Image (tube, rainbow, N blue to C red; front, side):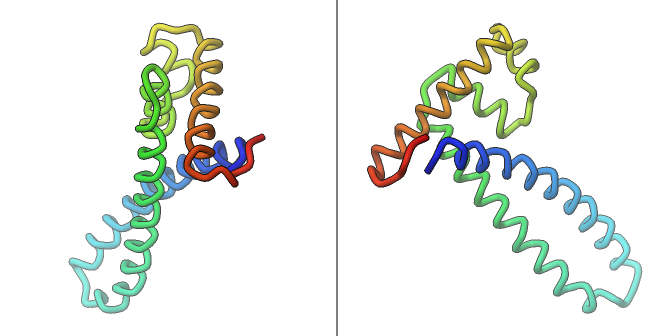
Length: 128
């Protein structure tokens, strides 16, 4: 896995999480509508599809959390705040009492440490 691919994995999850939030709202609205109609069977296939999509996103979250868990502090906290709670670098800097510049440096170091760990598990993974 390259550094760009790893960053893309984290970024993709952020977008997936936004999708998940919107889909959850839509499912709640649809369920409320269905509770008041006889059209429930019509929407069952759609709801099952959405559940499958949600399961895929949650699986991706578990994968990202497992990558974060391999890190020591302060990297673990930084990456958790960035990719699981979706704080900005400025917000993370405030919470962790670092400068924003230092948070960017630590973030880059964390990415490199994850890649290093992945390379140890699979030496055929390329590193950029």
